Image (cartoon, rainbow, N blue to C red; front, side, top):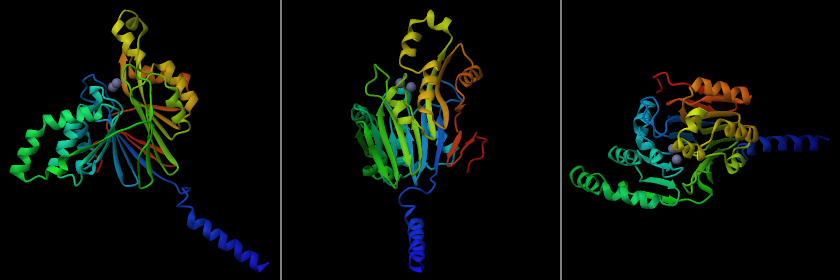
Length: 312
Ligand SMILES: [Zn+2]
Ligand SMILES: [Zn+2]
């Protein structure tokens, strides 16, 4: 009897010791919306960019207009950023890749910047290298900045796991943004926490598959008043490769994320508050409008912190 009791105690101790390794401990991901805009110029909506902090890694998804300034507003040292994941090569998602690259180099990022992106990323990056070769060589010669650290390491990705470090896994999956092909969404897993970033897409079954039950879904939206769409063929084309409110509701019902945050909002003849009210009348899950510099602490609860100008 005594022997079996002590075996039970030993078993319980063993369970407690191995639990952290088999992923049952609680994990935490911090997400910062660096830019919630689109190609449209808006001082309060920088271009698309999301910062994900997990397991000691700082990962950036898309490098839209203003990304470096937004990092600065959050007091995130630019030298911490060494991995950027591009959803696709539309200009609004890559406008500030050069800023992220070279300002990080000038501030002495300790390793070269790695860029993960779709087919075509290498050609785009080769253009950047060429465009800035004069600056890189002159700073190298005059200021002694290490040329090797100005390299850009490109990973042209295919669907599947594209990054794995310190328990953080990034999975790329294709979404539907034709004629842009391929366009990716990304899922980040860290222990028992997961988030999905849609990138630009219309309704995508593949996105639904990858988003089932995630803690956080950061999803794009296009919402236009029907009268405007009817008389504007260009808007009709734009709507075809983005997600309209009815499609978003379908995605959310099917995927059931714990929290949905809207970003890359393209609204025509519709106000943000009306959009969110309409969505909430169709979908009872938790859904909010993303704002630049908003922070989302994804743990057993998801805490939403609007920026109040004092992050340190
Ligand atoms: Zn876009
Ligand atoms: Zn796009």
